[in-house]
Image (tube, rainbow, N blue to C red; front, side, top):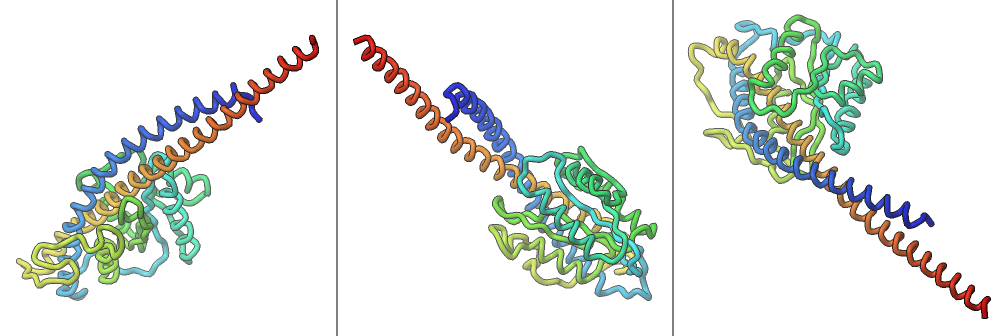
Length: 308
């Protein structure tokens, strides 16, 4: 059994750790509520944008209209956009995203390059010698579309230039405080299948916020009819870059909300474990102290007996 002095030092250090984890839990809770509010508030707008895009796509034929963002090419090279955190202490948040991304690389039969948002993801990919086209770190929490526009512009630029034939996003979708889900979305080229999949993810089928987003004039589960002026082609040409911005913005918001939720839960679990450890160490300390007292009493009694 460890000496009482060693156990006392361990109790003191564990209490310090408990104070740190509680402080981090409180900070993460505040950030999580803010990110959650922004992410949930953006869902109806993202849903409406995808609904309009679906209506436009149904009214335009390739013979009448061409856009690089809609062009489907033979897949020779793929880009994966991974969204992780700059900081750790958020449980399995980063590991789940990176594990999914690595699995995807194994499934693709063509070369894959990464655009990594978040220091943790970038460091992981560089250590394992994956090809990294762009690393974006130190960005912090995004709250407005203008803050993520540079990323949407980057994706549009590398796709239109022909550097990549498909672009996927691997990120964490926010379902609830206790539940986040890693999803894979095809960002470019736009297609009816990817739009429908995106809508299914914006309206979660599970969790506290299942079915929450609503679109003005619709239920959020079907498509309404729109009249476009001057023409569907002109409107689509103007709006496609905006749709890309909205899609990227929504991806980042979902990842932010999920990151802070995961960190809050991880810090709460760490704080609970620290409290349990303090209780166990206090019990051991009391036992060691009692054993020391008993030993000293025994020695005194033995000395008295020897003198008699």
